[in-house]
Length: 214
Image 1 (spheres, one colour):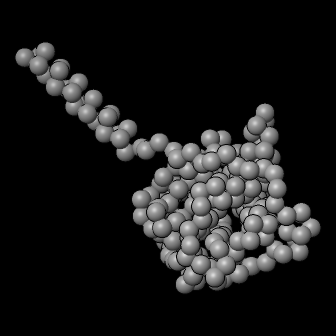
Image 2 (image 1 turned 180 degrees about the vertical axis):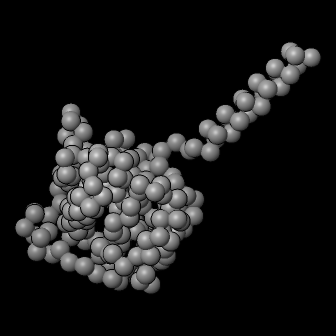
Image 3 (image 1 turned 90 degrees about the vertical axis):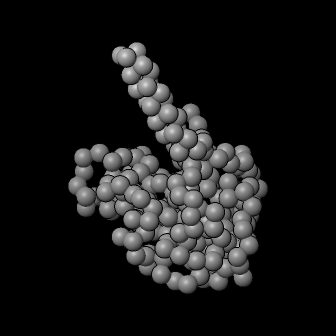
């Protein structure tokens, strides 16, 4: 009787572990980013601007790959340092990608996308109408757990500056590639935080819409 009971417990544990792993899909590898070409810096700065009119055309995966690397990818593999600075190199800003297909987290070390939600939450990433139809909305989230023992006030200040650096990288990439973009702060942050299933120590800083010009 004890042997049968032990076998049953092992079976239940095995099924439970298998089910848990089945719910955690593997990250989606992104194409290797192209780190050469594009417009000269001064040209990109000259053409940098915000727009609020976007085509619904999806961004090809290579374009998304290049943009995410430009935003906050690893440009010094030997040290793991990134294309944008962060206070004390905390690298506390996570980039979430909201698209028609779902919500993804950009994993810079693997240069991959981790699926977070298999639903379209673009409309919740801002209060303007265009966010629901633009192909990509980036959400910049500060993870305070990566920022040591400083005060919440200092964490807010540092993470706001760090998100701004990333947003400007995206602006310059878009100017170089003929894409449209606008960074946004008009967000129902509590509603979006709930939809994204963020932890209490994760805080939404900004969103940025990216797509082709309409």
